[in-house]
Structures are given as structure tokens and as C-alpha cells.
Image 1 (cartoon, one colour):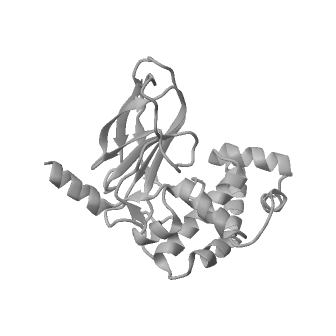
Image 2 (cartoon, one colour):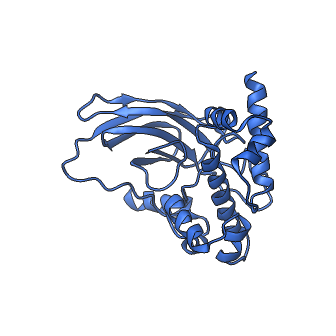
Length: 257
């Protein structure tokens, strides 16, 4: 039964990709899955970790990221191609999810030299989350970003984050009280997916891992959370946060040595 449900959710995600510029509803998605509207919403969130509407929004922004880097289309044209009727709404959601505006993202070539963390007041009593990030044998994941987010879609500003140059231990020492999701995403050694690649190809798409919800309380003991990277799949929410620029991180490491 679980495989049947996953195939139904997979059909809907493929439907989202194929109709990304169209306006459609939860009812349309439920019909594609061949479930009732309410049952569909429940099983979709159970399989992917997020509601169908948020997954669709993430897919649209993921495609916008690709178009900004791989085409010369204007921001207005791209916003319409991915299903937005207002370029202002598109630009606002892109910035809040990816971390930079569409124009800056294009200027940076689809990567960012650093990932800022959420501001916290000086009186916040923080705790530590630590563990180990492992990768499949024989893989070369490149830089690994690990961060804590409010939900399962890695977007916006992480609560705290770190960058590893290879699989191994990580430590996040400034974690405020709350309920968070730990996300890890690799940056391919060549700097990211290239035009024409399959969106889930092992050599072009990042490897990902997630754990949560993780509850952190003020003054609580260190949380030990290990993650194992795997190739991103069709049922995984897209990584919306702008990937790190491999070159800038390497130069920073050289300057510090």
C-alpha cells in the first residue's frame, strides 16, 4: 500500500513539473492522484513532509532558479513561466526563499559566497546540536552545507549552519530554543547542475539528508544527530536556499590557512 501511495504522490509531482506555468488547484492534484481532496492532502504531506501547495511553490521557485542561470529570459518572463501572475509577488517569494533577489541570483551565477544565519538577541540561551554527516561510498559530494530550519524545506535564513569540506563531524553551537529540522545538502564539485541535465541525475543534483523535528530547550544537553547523504529524489522538497559558491569558499579557506 505504501508503494501505491508513493506512486500516486509521484504522479502529482510530475504533474506539477509538467504544468508549472498553469494555474491549478488542490482538487486538480487530487484527481491526478485519484484520491479525495482531503485524503490526498494528508498522504502527500506524509510522504513528502510538506503540504502540496508548499511543494508546488518550491518547485516553481526551483525552476525559476534554473531559468535565471540557464536562459536570458527577463525576470518578468520567468515569473510568468513558473506560474506567477505578479512579478512583485514572485520576486518577494524568491528573495525570502532563496536568500537573494532574482536579479542578484542571476548576477552571482546561481550561487552565493556565504549563507547568513538568523539574527538572535544577546540574551538568548543557546544550545548545541552536533553529529556526523556521512556520504555514500564512492561518492564525491563536494562542499556540504548543514543547517537548522523551521520546516522541511531548506529555504530562507537558517537558524544556524555550518559548511563541511568533506563528510565528517559537524557542530552547531548557537541553536536557540525551539523545534527545528536539520538539513544537509551537498554542492556538486563542479559547482552545481548544468543545463540539459536530468533534474535528479546523481552527478548534477545535490545529495541531501534531513532529520526532525528536533526540540531544543534552553540549557538542554547537547543534541547528537547523525545524517547520511543520499541523491535527491522526486519525492524530496527542492533545496531553495542558494547553494554556496565552491570557489569563494575554497579561497576563504586558503586565506585562513
